Amino acid sequence: MNEEIPVIDFSTLAGGAAEERAQVIHHLETVSHDWGFFMVVSNGVPKRLMDEMLDACEGFFNLSEDEKQVYNVKHVLVDPVRFGTSLNTSMEKISKLCFISSLMAAQPLLPLFKYSTIKEISDSGDLSSLPSCYSCRGPDIDGPTETLEEEVPIIDFSLLVGGTAKQRTQVIQDLGKACRDWGFFMVVNHGVPKSLMEAMLNACMGFFNMREDEKQEYNEKHVLDPIRHGTSFNTSVDKVRYWRDYLKVFVHPDFHSPAKPSGFREISVEYATRTREMTKELLKAIWESLELKPDDMEEALDLNSCFQILVANLYPPCPQPELTLGIPPHSDHGLLTVLLENGVNGLKVEHNGKWVHVKSLPNSFLVNTGDQLEIVSNGKYKSVVHQAEVNASSTRMSLVTLVGPSLDNVVVPAPQLVKHKHQLAYNGMKYRDFLEHQQANPLLVKSLLDLLRLHN
Image (cartoon, rainbow, N blue to C red; front, side, top):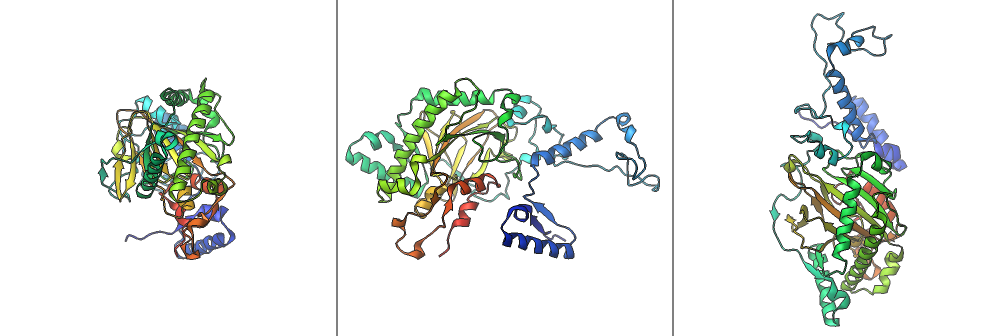
């Protein structure tokens, strides 16, 4: 009989509101009486640690028999370490090997616990097939299945900031249409020097190429720590792993930088400044496309103290790229995200219910709308869902600069866009709380934004 067993969300029990915790306790009482069995999710135990424990036990069973002999069946209570077969061979005539399997039991076991990053795994050459803990794609995965090759909107930034009044007006209209129809566009003639873009990509690759012990001080910290290095999305909550290493650095309003590699600080401060200035000009034009006054934008979003993060994503070659993703379908938490690629494509955006494979032009930026823009526009401009794919032959690197409102800003729909109370589409939420919640939980499309959505 196929029947769904009860599921308990431990994070709600341990950290939820009093009412939510009471509901979990009542649910526990019911399932303990009716089942005596349940599944615990969001348990806070890092998946990495669970995988490593399984692999360590597998490693013990793979020892030679003489190495394990010292622990062979002893007294059931007195001896703290015992190894044997069946349950208790001193009482049973039939014996069986008790075998603890890992999630990868169906394939040759790779000692993944030796490696802390995808780059290490890929560079090792130990991998001929994809470990099942990275398998996240298949016919049962929700979302669009068809991929299109379609031209994305192109915005000429030089006409926005240096063109005639007529040209600027046209670009603002084009921006509004791109945000409304796509939530995505490509920016050309943006004024950021090509040499700076290349230097920033090289600096980030220099970080990823450092020894693991040099990067270790930044490994997997709290989601609001200003410098973080890790793998997947958030290994403490990921139900499956993603084929990605990352470096995340807060660069505004307070600037941070890893100490190495040499030159990273100087390059990143200039790159962050130039891309932030460009992004604020784009936001001002998008604001005008909503027929709102630019001065109101500063008041609504506090952009003088805007939050900006620099994220370098590394996607090394993968043995079975059709089975995994670099990052799953999601929307970004900020206002606008500016993305630079190293010449290897892999970004897909959702458009009209289908995936569009994006091919960037040389020396261009790819820009997508985020959740805070959807909220402040009262849903007129939706944040776009996108994902990163990987390939078998080339290392892809993307460099993201995301700009959001001030972390202490409570983002609500612009009052000018809500003429009547029933037209209000979203509740407000402090951006810091929004960011922390999204980054500390499994990445599920637009799950947090959906919680703030009002259904009038």
